Length: 354
Ligand SMILES: C[S@@+](CC[C@H](N)C(=O)[O-])C[C@H]1O[C@@H](n2cnc3c(N)ncnc32)[C@H](O)[C@@H]1O
Ligand code: SF4
Image 1 (tube, rainbow, N blue to C red):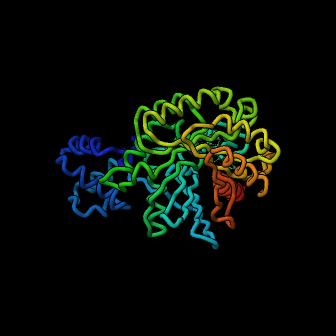
Image 2: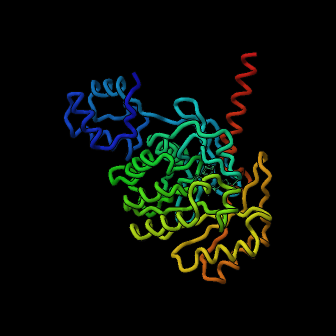
Image 3: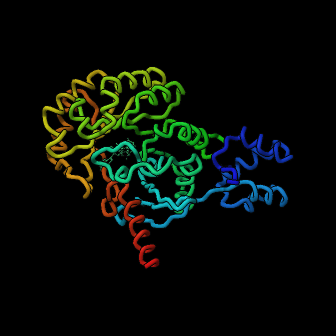
């Protein structure tokens, strides 16, 4: 029988668990605080619990940890890239970034991704599985343990489509923002999606204060379909309607991600279409030259053209920034560290077998 994933549980669920073990319900608050506030590494760290209860918890529950199998540290700034092994051996990646206003982390929401975007390394082997809430949390807790610092901002922009794993994402958000845990403000969290329209509407109905980022990458459906298969299911028009609903429900300005691909979506005509699409909207555009991956033929837009594109948007009243690149000395496209670590592990295994 598999053990209970206690790090994914709400305080209410913890209470029920403890009552079912014949314990007093106030133990739930103590255990919740050990896990999410003090970030206990083992049940034995929970010193205000009786030895008997700790033993019972060890038998019935797992307190999952991630194992950092590789950490790349930038020599230029504080950026660190982590490859973490999950309890089942799957590998995911997370990034730690240091800014003047605090520390920011980029975390994964799935092992792989099934969305198939043409520029993205995360999807090359498809989707393996969803991450549990505990596995999303633990990326952050583990990076905090490693750096000895606290996180203030979170972007769910690593491997995976977070809205394809919505119920686990919602529990993760509940736990990481809990006043009895890390107490991170919803306003300091960004969730990025390729545009799963029904899930955007579901998220809007929760009325959270998190920022929604839409990976747009093209100003018209025809071009978007060549870059992102999801564009065959939902049109840009439908995405914009869902964004309006999100804004109406939350009052939060939408961010649009636009990866510039040389000769594909970076011309004056595309900028004009993008302006027409976003004019009058309370939004922000993040421009980022695409990070080329060797498995695909896309090349990044070069510096001058990136600036020209941005200026054209700004001149027409569209807020646009070029995303500053951190850790350029360790930079590799999202999902590539995980792929390399996995390939190395497969090679070692093959060598030891043969
Ligand atoms: C990896 S995705 C994860 C979140 C979600 N699945 C999404 O697509 O928004 C995060 C962001 O990275 C972008 N991205 C993926 N591969 C990229 C690449 N090679 N170069 C630049 N941006 C990339 C995506 O388009 C998206 O805006
Ligand atoms: S960009 Fe996002 S949705 Fe598209 S394949 Fe990558 S992780 Fe998945």
